[in-house]
Image (cartoon, rainbow, N blue to C red; front, side, top):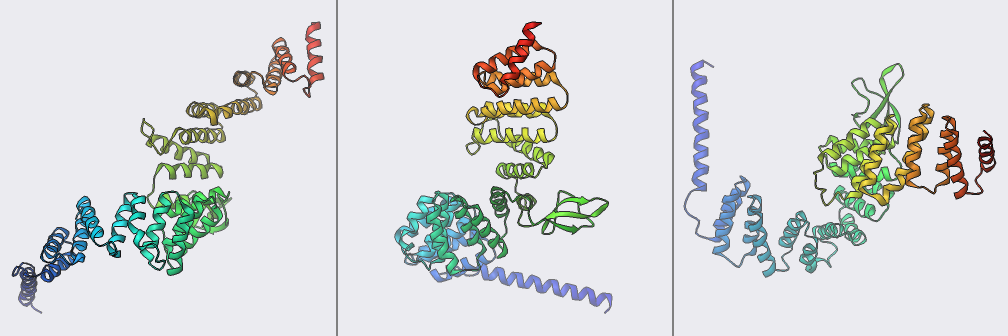
Length: 444
């Protein structure tokens, strides 16, 4: 083909495309429709091209031309919603359902919008005329979701069971069944249902997060450990259906890895899929802490605290915030930073005295033990003095403080603590030793 012929061919194709576009425009903007059916057809064509405002206008004209056809207003409401006119769409569909209470498709659509706004009670009331028919899949699923939002898992499970009976291959219904079991305190059954949903092709970040949560509750933070060859792998990352733990000695491409039965795998999968909610980051920290991955745990907890506004949000009450502080302390302790450990436990106790005040007392004993091992008697004595201030009548604390003071050469101070020990516990197991020390110091 010569260059001139190629040029003419291109010009011809361009003219043909232009003619086709003009023909389509003429069809769309041709003679004004005169009947409701004509307006409805125009609305359908506009919907197919995703011109939602034009579709809504056409369906509105169809409804005005024939008010006896509720499906026209139903389609108008759907296209208004897709045109981001949610309030108008909901108001219109409410009118349709009020006039046609047995119009199931409209009721289910409106229920879906209600559920997006967490209007669970209204959803149940809306679907009441259809609730008795167990074979109406969409009705049963919407009712199940509404019951879950209201914290009624046993009722939700009945609706979800109907859905699974109708569609056994539905992964989303297995996920909803897992939610029922989770809220009922049955993590084993919940994780089983979540895994079934995943096996049926339903995969979301939320599902992986729930799986991680329930597996963590069962102590299955690392499971299905196996050896994996990963030439381009990196420890602490996902590698296909596994999470790489650490390389084998002298084998940089061979890793220990855990599989899909592990909380560690699923929490990282949820993060990889884009989820970064405070709850997920806290779970990432908790699972990492449980698997002795202290730096990863600390990084996750720091992200949680950094994302929290100064005024505590409603879904992050002080006890939950306090638990993050406390676990940050545990991660610091695992990394050998005893001072940071104590700082975080103090912050946790300040946020929730009832839950973490007693743990601060224990933390001082842990710190004292660490400093004893390190040979830092001064820090050990300071920690035990803090513990004694927390519980002045604790005989064990007084005895340990006396021991630390005795080892530091402060024998008079040690005897003073041991006298207090016997006041609170006259039958202390070290009573004879204490009395001998008191007599010895008294003779000097």
